[in-house]
Amino acid sequence: MLRPQKKQQYALRAVFELAKQEGKGPTKISEIAEAQAIPLRFLEVILSQLKGSGLIDSKRGFYGGYYLIKPPHKITVGDILRFLQGPEDPTHCTACISKTNCPFNNSCAFASMWKEVKDAIFKIYDQTTMQDLLDIEYS
Amino acid sequence: MLRPQKKQQYALRAVFELAKQEGKGPTKISEIAEAQAIPLRFLEVILSQLKGSGLIDSKRGFYGGYYLIKPPHKITVGDILRFLQGPEDPTHCTACISKTNCPFNNSCAFASMWKEVKDAIFKIYDQTTMQDLLDIEYS
DNA sequence: AACTTCTTGACTGTTTTAGTCAAGAAGGTA
DNA sequence: TACCTTCTTGACTAAAACAGTCAAGAAGTT
Image 1 (spheres, each protein chain N blue to C red):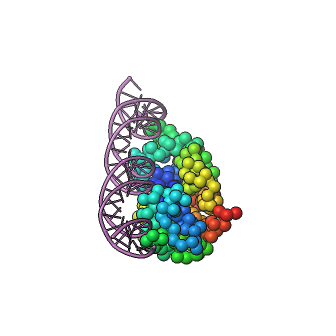
Image 2: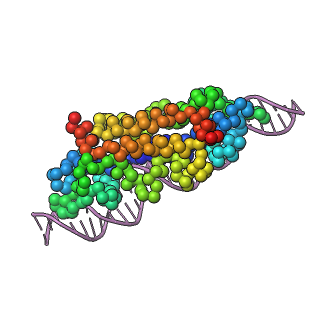
Image 3: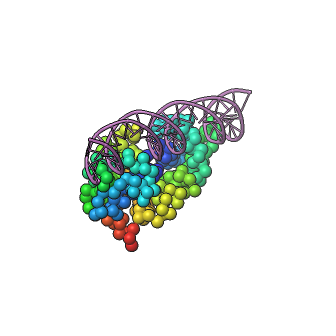
């Protein structure tokens, strides 16, 4: 029912790396890629998408790179994953909730369970900030 | 991060249908397929796999079909989904928990969050029985 | 014997995921 | 100015996963 998607893992780890480098000026894509073991070319795509989220921004040129717009304690895992899932249906994470997926018009017996699951997951995502993860990393 | 898989939805709905038909003798694949809007041929594959779980069994011949081995209140969503995920790694639902997936040997800052998520999901799966779903259906 | 059912494994088409590539735009440095 | 280095963009491709199909056969029922 659940499957890890590399793109989303990579995105999380990339933002996490930016959080680690906070205050040191922009971080180059190549540095992030190396530190977090992410294929460089793929990361280029991911980061440029992620700019649309308002969480990160970039600067070009010799001392360029990516950096966080908000402080680590104000960026949650939920922010990132919700953004990557796209705005059209941030809740389609589980079956039946999506209208187009349920042949019973969202009124089947499973619907409430799927909603519970989704809420449980996002509760965790939304309460986990980049700062929390930094604290774990350095504990 | 999450995506519904039709096969698993179908499996749940098929077992649910068997629960609805409990006590009326075996239910034909074709009846299940129609009642739950599942492609017949695909359902054949799914049900025959599901026999290995010890939750359902089948009978051939004119009055043949599938039926539950255990009563609805002893079959949980978790039983079904765990079985379909395969025994090799029932926990690989989220990233980083799987050794083969994490370049940091499961010791990255995200690992504990993924575990929390997995536990939260399966807590719900494991406490939801077919009987609970029947109660919802008929309420 | 005839019928209906499940059984099995191989097969196929489509979609998603993962990742690559190359040309270019923009900023920094000298 | 010239020349770096960086990000930027969209198109492209390979591989895997998913969804679904098919056909021949085995096994009960009547």
